[in-house]
Image (cartoon, rainbow, N blue to C red; front, side, top):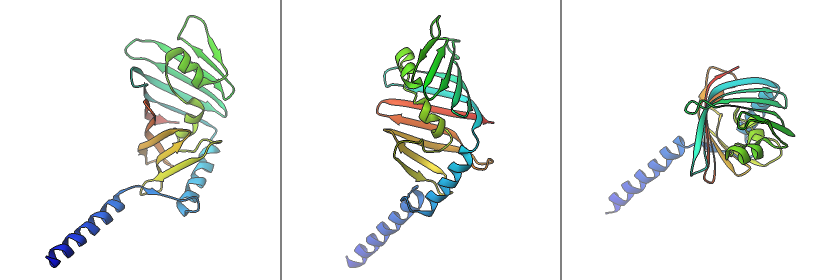
Length: 200
């Protein structure tokens, strides 16, 4: 019986070690890997002009929608063009952190002080545009505490900030720093799925 118990304990210990090796590593503020993240953020934040193209799906638990997306960023100014493949509708959301303009939803141009609030009111989409500017590149948005989990090559695997959980399921590994290919964001029943097909 003693030998069996010893073997069982050894097997359990090995399983724990294997699972720990496979799991993403949660890091403290003073960890060297977070220093690597700060360097990564400095490099990407210096690139104030960028573009991505891909597909986006948004759901609030009851209904949702999906669209092809082209996102252009120039400093604080963004320009999102959304094309719904099923309905054929085209939307354009553009502005900066203090002003937003939405075209294509109604006959008239819609304006507001906050892009996320404008989208929530007009199309029932929960899309935190100002934060996503950072999250889509694997960066922490300024102004709110964040918790990061890294993968085995020191890239963000999960980011928790402002009540959202952002998962990075895949990267374009041929870029330096690597940029996300699949970004999944969740807050309660709200879901955002972004599949990036190309970065510029």
